[in-house]
Length: 115
Image (cartoon, rainbow, N blue to C red; front, side, top):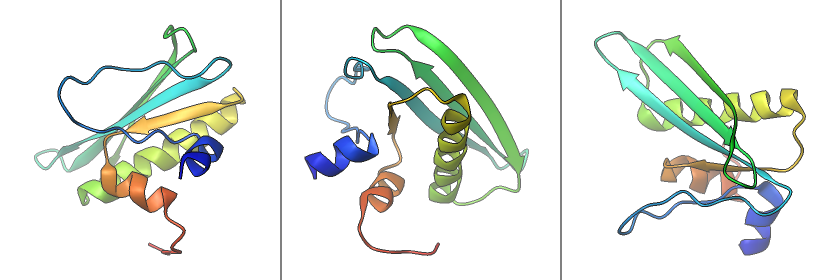
């Protein structure tokens, strides 16, 4: 599993005690991703932030789409958006971090799920 995490650049986050941001390894960037949901506005908001190996801010991006959806779907769309954005930026090695356990577990799974 550790090798798989290293290859994908995905860093699962555990929620125990105080949570603090950790820097990526030397020569890498870190992209934190989150989604927000507003039933009142019928919208899902996406936010992502990239920091360098020293923790310095590099870039951030926000986006939203209409039609509220299930949380894991919105979080997965946030991951897809971040992957596309980072690919367009051509930054090199990037670690991704998010708090959507279901999405992270599915991404790291060897099971092929078309949804």
